[in-house]
Image 1 (cartoon, one colour):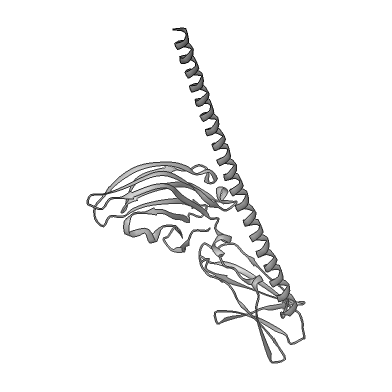
Image 2 (cartoon, rainbow, N blue to C red):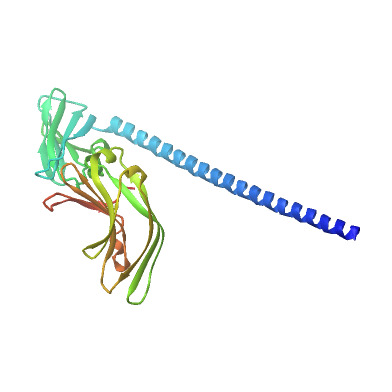
Length: 295
């Protein structure tokens, strides 16, 4: 009897050691997985930094080459205040040619439309109004003694004017969604609505922020948002639709002038082309901007 008890006791000890070994191994595997993930993140971060540094070097080389071979000593622009009445923004361009005579004149051409710059000392400047949806890359034309010289300078290029005028907020859905084949169509969502990208001053610029889910023109759910930088809305919803109905999830905010900023976060079925688009609409319904969400 004593020998049997000893065997049972030994088995329990061995079983305990086996369990402890497995737990230790699982913890070690988990630690190794975490360390591997950290290393992957570090490598991704380093790759991004190296890529950014390389792009910056190429950019600096291009700028230096332009300065060396170009007609312009310096050029820049300054964006003014958005005009709520005209829905445009004034931009002042300044150009300083390398060589000057008493007869030198400077113009900027915007898709064939030319504006004359006024001279002040060695610099030429002019102000022009633009819609915020405009891509701006004017051609500089310097005329001296009847000879015309043309140059395009990256320092006058504005690819995304809207983000310089209206702070941008990017919101996305992270999780799972499914859409049944037969009618009534069930659209199921489970996950999180969170902030993706945000301009630095968006929290101070916008008010009345919310996230809504609507079916056609009827709001089904509305979530109030208090902090744009930390948007995290738990979503676990099931919606029933009929053929042709449109289910849309939108982030909405209003600025001090009553302009409404909207971003489509998700849309069901055949309406997926609307996802990741944003729009800015004036209080009277005029469209200020409609395009892609910033990345």
